[in-house]
Amino acid sequence: MITFKPSILHLEVAWVYNFCGIGIPLTDGIIDNGLDLSRFNRLSLAIKYTAPNENAKLKITFRNFNDNYSKLTDTVSLKFNSISYNPNRHKLPVDIPFDALQVDNWWVEQYKVGFTNSQVELTNVSYLEILTDGMNVIGNYNIEIQRIDLYGKLISEANLLKLILLIWLITIILLITLQRNVLHRMSITDSLTGLYNRQGIRSWTNKKILMGINRQHFYMFYLDLDDFKKVNDTYGHQVGDQLLIGFSHYVENYLDSIENIQFAFARLSGDEFALVVLGLEDEQIEIFAENLIGVWDSPIVLEQHETYARASLGVAKSSGDVKTFDGLLARADSAMYYAKKKGKNCFKVFNEKVSQDIFFRKQTAEKIKNAIIHDQFHLNFMPIFDAKSLKIVSIEVLIRANTHELLGIGPDVFIPIAEEYNLIKSIDLWVIETTFKQIKKEFTFLHSHPSTFHL
Image (cartoon, rainbow, N blue to C red; front, top):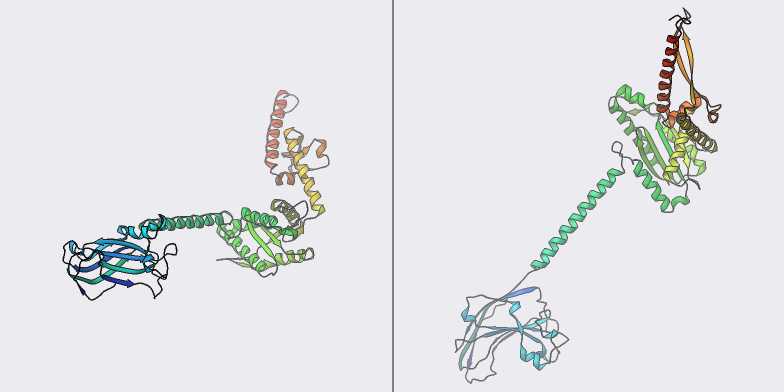
């Protein structure tokens, strides 16, 4: 806001180039260091003007400095961004939009300014001038400047809409990103224990391999809780879940206490867990496995019970032919199977013997499958006698293999393998169907020879 005291000028001789008014400097004395008024959009003027003629006008001019057309030694070279109006025909204050300003034609012609620089410009305003727009009548001219205000917007409506749209888009992107992160976290996390799930630990392991960390050896530990079903059957599934959570915490605390290793710990399903460790040496594996088993020597305190966890542990090491999570898991699972057979709550490291046994069991499973398809089993019926009367009271059905491929492999071997490879249901179905067919056959034979057998 700018205010001035009123001043009166008496004109005694009329001439076409007579002017009076005031120039207000907007610099610190250096004309090329003006104010940037481009953020303002209108001017509010409270100016009273009296003159001998009724149509007298005032001219408002913003003088802009620009190196393209201005000279420091020539103040007239500053651009004239002007507007003329009659203050007496408007109620004060008078609002003048900057869009109404125009560059004076005489200035453009005198300085031969091109089209680009002949546009209104308010980026470096050195003066604000308020002048009479001609004085061609003798008499008193009185200009009383009461108030001058500049108004503008920090941001235009168009830019404000753009800003709102940008903020909205950023917000949407952030929300989508957060939601995606939450969903991704859920997809790789076990909901009960908070550990990785199978997908999570597989992704972690394969990512480390792709990053080139496979120069170090990965060690896979496959853990399976012993007799977990008994806990569920005895105390219920809620207590079983608490045991799984407590077991997870015990193992995590142990792993966090070991320096210089990287690890990922996951619950695969039910009572099965997988642990991948980086940073161990071969000579440390057995000690690490023994200490890991020792973690659950202490009782796990549940809400209303106190119980012990026992687990069998299989260990596998990455090698040239096995560099993926699934390959390591398969070997560790096989080693864990040996630990179970050894007596539970112990560990077994995958070695050549285990590898040969895996190959044998896979081959045997394939032979069992083919024997079922081609009906290459037979049944033996073993009578069961009453110890007092020595009479036959029932029959035990025993399955045996006819095929040469299973020669020397008895049911004590192929039945557990069939259970492991989900073939036991097919064997059970074959035994049941074949037994009833034999019963029907024997029943028909007995009724066709009544004189031979006393029925």
